[in-house]
Image 1 (cartoon, rainbow, N blue to C red):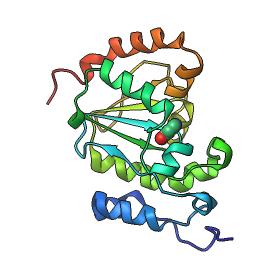
Image 2 (cartoon, rainbow, N blue to C red):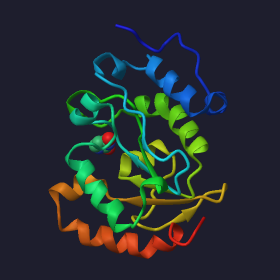
Image 3 (cartoon, rainbow, N blue to C red):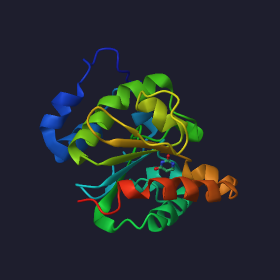
Length: 197
Ligand code: URA
């Protein structure tokens, strides 16, 4: 069993210097927590490298682990529906997760796993440079270290980005009735990504 005890912490700034390709390589090599032990594939990102909107999900599931692509299963179909509803083109969005390896039995990532993977998350955000960051559910909010955002209410970050928490697409799979509320939250915020850039 390999653990992360003896590996020095890596900072987001060091990772940013590597660029997106370098970060991909660093994630592929990463053994900083035990999640890598059962990963078939690391799941790094999909979408544009200069997105207006960045979606942050929780963690890869079974389909994502097999394909190495974020949100490529049933929850991904719901996310794709939302992206179409938001009227985002292929080159206007990207999707990443809080952790890059599938947690066993689709459990939530632990606080420690979120913390260990956070430098990758922060460096990806910095390099992708979105105007709008959409946190898909509470785990994404926790990983981002902001507390108690209201659902659908955009806040501005000190860097001038907009942060919004929306329902995780998997929650919409199980409770289709939430879809109407999700669409209202999108409607409320669409000026943030429409008619810009
Ligand atoms: N759920 C997530 O949070 N991320 C994925 O990539 C797939 C499902």
